[in-house]
Image (tube, rainbow, N blue to C red; front, side):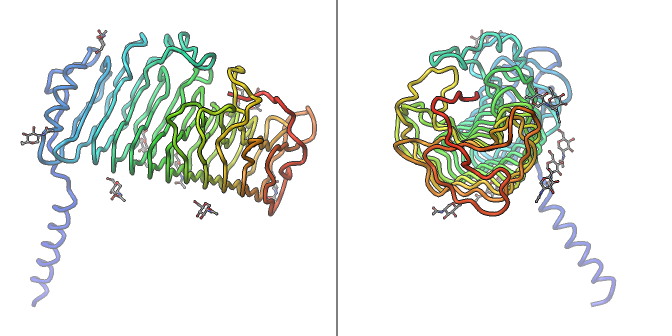
Length: 402
Ligand SMILES: *[C@@H]1O[C@H](CO)[C@@H](O)[C@H](O)[C@H]1NC(C)=O
Ligand SMILES: *[C@@H]1O[C@H](CO)[C@@H](O)[C@H](O)[C@H]1NC(C)=O
Ligand SMILES: *[C@@H]1O[C@H](CO)[C@@H](O)[C@H](O)[C@H]1NC(C)=O
Ligand SMILES: *[C@@H]1O[C@H](CO)[C@@H](O)[C@H](O)[C@H]1NC(C)=O
Ligand SMILES: *[C@@H]1O[C@H](CO)[C@@H](O)[C@H](O)[C@H]1NC(C)=O
Ligand SMILES: *[C@@H]1O[C@H](CO)[C@@H](O)[C@H](O)[C@H]1NC(C)=O
Ligand SMILES: *[C@@H]1O[C@H](CO)[C@@H](O)[C@H](O)[C@H]1NC(C)=O
Ligand SMILES: *[C@@H]1O[C@H](CO)[C@@H](O)[C@H](O)[C@H]1NC(C)=O
Ligand SMILES: *[C@@H]1O[C@H](CO)[C@@H](O)[C@H](O)[C@H]1NC(C)=O
């Protein structure tokens, strides 16, 4: 073969490669369905979704630049092919707390949500009505984005603003990745957890920034293989496993890794929490926290099995959640309170295999010397220890932070 035919062959090869990687997506633009900025697009979005979901080749549901009002939207599969929701604009909720959430995605495989747009919950009016931090039977406010039974999917680049309740909620999902997501709500907005995951497996949350009024990421019951990497939290209540043991329907937790995260100005750092007088008994195991940086965090490292905010439970009956195989490794930075490490485990089911290694925390205030407190746990302590875990016995009835 001559040089020319070699070059031709190379070009042909390149062309074929390009063709196979380029997506031949059918685009379903909501504006061609009649959506206009600053109007309610609930029906229009439903129509566009129906066609995009029915498409037998990969489809893209496009939300172009602009602010569109949405009451509540159920985007339900299964769909005939892969589907991408491309958010260039903002989907804005009604300020009144109506419905079940801004958008609920359900029963979809290979969903992608992308774009620099936002889900805006307009939560301010709702936050005033929220009483869930005060009592068990409370008014349930709508969430921004809910994912139920979603598999093999990616959510990237988008923003969630001012949700009335949790920003992003995952229920019964498998293999879903969140990356480069931004979540913003004020410090004083109740129950506005950033990402809450339950009954799910293979969930990855990475390169994400969450400023909110409640937990940054909360990993509820029934989860397996949850990985949280390079997430920056603050303000808010920190990264939490739990709360566990409140409802009879709950199932075990196995495998949560929190790695390379930053907590700034949060009321807790990395936390495992379960209710006393649990409604159910199960195990929470293989929970690992590694390479964490704290900046002015109030309870940097905490296991609280007497989690009982606003004293709505009986702390005298020990938690029935067994915590096992936990590690806190390479955790550094500053604590806003002098109790930098607190482990309160269940009297009936002490925590087992808790490893604490390489801690370098300093207390920035003037209330006392940096210390640590424990009950019902004997941790394995290695490496640098400032402070060493379990210097003191934790007082009975120490109040829980939210
Ligand atoms: C999938 O495609 C078939 C054939 O075009 C159609 O009849 C069906 O309604 C589509 N399914 C969905 C979920 O839209
Ligand atoms: C919002 O949706 C709910 C349920 O679909 C409906 O009852 C209500 O009237 C809608 N509100 C507005 C303002 O469209
Ligand atoms: C997880 O989902 C991604 C995105 O659809 C896919 O590329 C990957 O193959 C899936 N992984 C498994 C183990 O199915
Ligand atoms: C992350 O998302 C922002 C929009 O929120 C976007 O501008 C930026 O390009 C994304 N970064 C990467 C690495 O994709
Ligand atoms: C961590 O996430 C931030 C976005 O919050 C990103 O800019 C940075 O590149 C990520 N770091 C790594 C090592 O991926
Ligand atoms: C922490 O919060 C204080 C008080 O709200 C604020 O002044 C400070 O800038 C915050 N620090 C960081 C690093 O965000
Ligand atoms: C502890 O958790 C790690 C990570 O999930 C796992 O590899 C290891 O087998 C567990 N150890 C025990 C004793 O269960
Ligand atoms: C540290 O956090 C406390 C409590 O959240 C706050 O009052 C204080 O302003 C913060 N200090 C700095 C230096 O950010
Ligand atoms: C502990 O952290 C301080 C500042 O946060 C730093 O100066 C010091 O070198 C660290 N010590 C070790 C052994 O890493």
